[in-house]
Image (cartoon, rainbow, N blue to C red; front, side, top):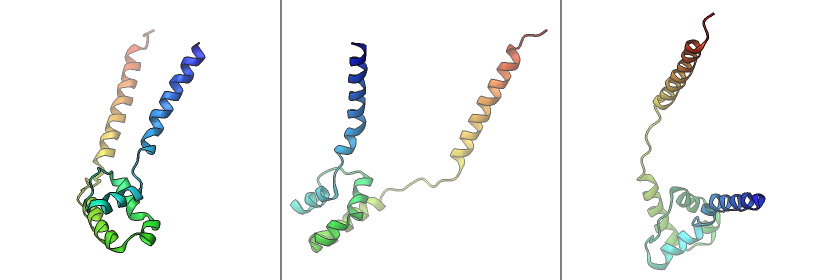
Length: 116
């Protein structure tokens, strides 16, 4: 019984971990969404939009009129997201946190040593 519970728990974890990949939009779905009515009705992640731009099959076989307009829309959406510039402050803060934790651990160890 215990093995069966662990097996079912493992199956549930794998299904939850792998289902997001199965639900991702393909470049063809993005193309079809725009081709149906001239607008993107779905919500797409940046990775899905970038995959559309990198898809060679659509570039070769898609309708050039649709591709030109859709490429402009997708590039506009992707360029609208600004990323915070990396300044190194995050690494410095993590380094300070590590030093504080190591120093605190060493201090606690010294305080708890028996005095003989």
